[in-house]
Amino acid sequence: MAAENIARQKPYTLDPDYRNKNFEEVETSFTAEQAATEAKRCIKCKNPRCVQGCPVNVSIPAFIEQVAVGNIEEAGKIIRGTNLIPSVCGRICPQERQCEGNCVLGIKGEPVAIGALERYVGDNSGSQPVEIKSSRKKVAVIGSGCAGLSAAADLVKAGHKVTVFEALHALGGVLRYGIPEFRLPRTALDREIESLKQLGVEFKANVIIGKSLTIQDIKNDDYDAIFICSGAGLPKMLNVSGENLNGGYSANEFLTRVNLMRA
Image (tube, helix red, strand yellow):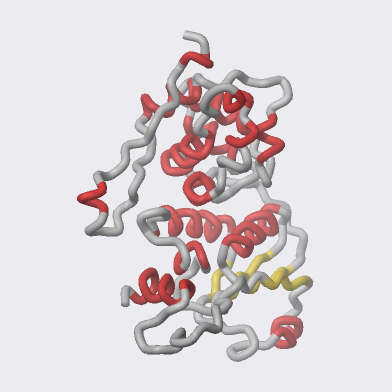
């Protein structure tokens, strides 16, 4: 069957009457059969626009080709060449505006489900050992959210000794306290963080820069560079009457209470 005639695969979703009572992930990952079928929809463009739409330029046709033949470990190796957190990105990246939004099949039909395939590969492949040549440089990363984890991944692959400082007790920043577990399971996030630890990234939680440590303290510890990615932790209030009454929360506070404190 021609690739363009294969129907786009749909992940199984929990029934609304069931999922409104828990925080289980709403969409399940593809089955092996679904992943292989979806991968065969890729028409292997000579000029892959999907790669151009990917912020980190993952070799999308190359990893999809490996999924089509069932070589998931090789697919994982290809993705992690430029993106070390595929299980996270496969779930939360806005693929409809990036890789899938540029897919040629989407011009007249439905694009290849690149995000779902990336998620499948991330969940079903292990991080591969990476040969790293030390640069003898130290870099401090302040914040362990999206930017912090991405920077740590690229920096450690470049040979730098990386330490990530996180103000909260749990790592992940907005990935943990801003995104509900039904969208991004903590098991997936923890697995990606563990893979960074295996590469040599050091994480220090409960460290508030400016209180526990100052920027000068970090400089005095012989760090060659400091990357500050503390995120937008403070909400922008509406300045309307009653917004400070008991029981009223900003989105930031509400999500933090639900995701970190279960309050």
